[in-house]
Length: 341
Image 1 (cartoon, rainbow, N blue to C red):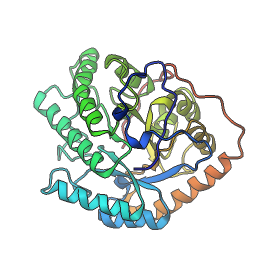
Image 2 (cartoon, rainbow, N blue to C red; image 1 turned 90 degrees about the vertical axis):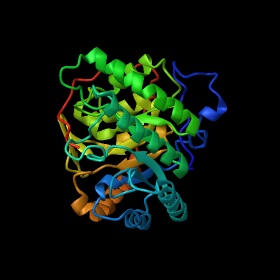
Image 3 (cartoon, rainbow, N blue to C red; image 1 turned 180 degrees about the vertical axis):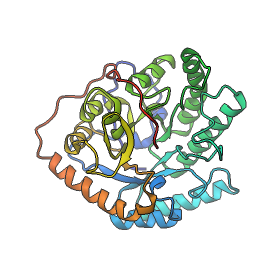
């Protein structure tokens, strides 16, 4: 495992949490002088075999990979998952790549409906299928030494009251947190435009419903593009406000109000302040490029994206220090947007 973030505990962190509730990847002290660690998501390299994708990223100089469990990359439903996971672990180690495990594969559970079933599905058996996938992801993440396992809520089902859906989400996430804590890898929920849990305010609502568990157990996947899409504050301010809970970062360009993952320079985000905020707040997990609609150009976009991020980080070091990060409630959201991942 690679060194990770130790943020301010925040008002809701458990001061009496057991030492083994904190994964080893999260116990190093923050150091704003350390370079950020850049990764690339395999959901943007689906035309490559997984071994080829890992070789590419290592050759380009990436620090890690956002590994989406899918039929073409460490299929969670194919035979011999344990043996295949061990193979990937050895390859990551040999290549010196850090990993975050992601679970946003579009059709891994339902070949006809994108991202279904979800944790909100009215059918208990359907919800169980998603829970089972996430439990597999937690086990895989533990075997790979992942610094986080990512998940999302799903959209509000038709004819379901919002309060019912929130309670259903809390009820399904609770046992996942138990498994994540036992495995020593944090579960990192991603606010997703168009989903029930769409924004930072929604993340904190779930935390409160679950009794505000330690950030080392229930963390946040912060997508920088999503902040630009729908949060009321600029992405850099979102980073500082959410810093105590961030366990994984996804990054791409995006425009206000449009949920479309864009290559760097094609949207509206000012990246040096975002990278400065991540570094200033001590984040040491992966900052993973997410361009899932661009696999046809994945190898070239992986090359140009890393160059862009390295240049933006160099610029970020010339900026004046930002304010200390907040530990209070996240900023309110302006609302949802179309889901276009």
